Image 1 (tube, rainbow, N blue to C red):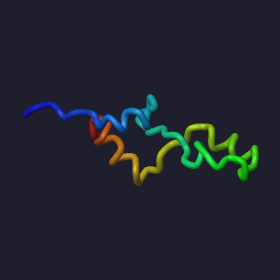
Image 2 (cartoon, rainbow, N blue to C red):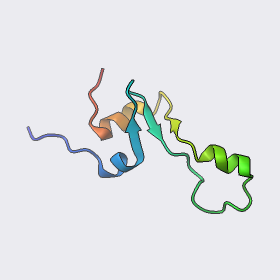
Image 3 (cartoon, one colour):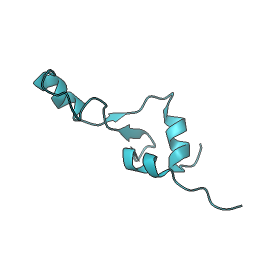
Image 4 (cartoon, rainbow, N blue to C red):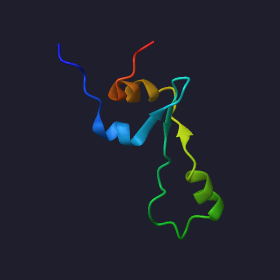
Amino acid sequence: MPKMKTHSGAKKRFKLTAKGKVKARHAFTSHILEKKSPKKKRHLGKSFVVSDHDAPRVKVLLGAKKK
């Protein structure tokens, strides 16, 4: 069998932490920022950990080993 290829879109958008969690960027950060408060924009700028429900699907796209 050929090797599985990493999903190009996923590798640009997600990173795996050392413990195997999936980090991503928040949505709603690129435009229509005038109406959002500075506090909201500041918090959206930080990365977050993807939920336990969605993480397995992202890991398959990244080619991470299943545990």
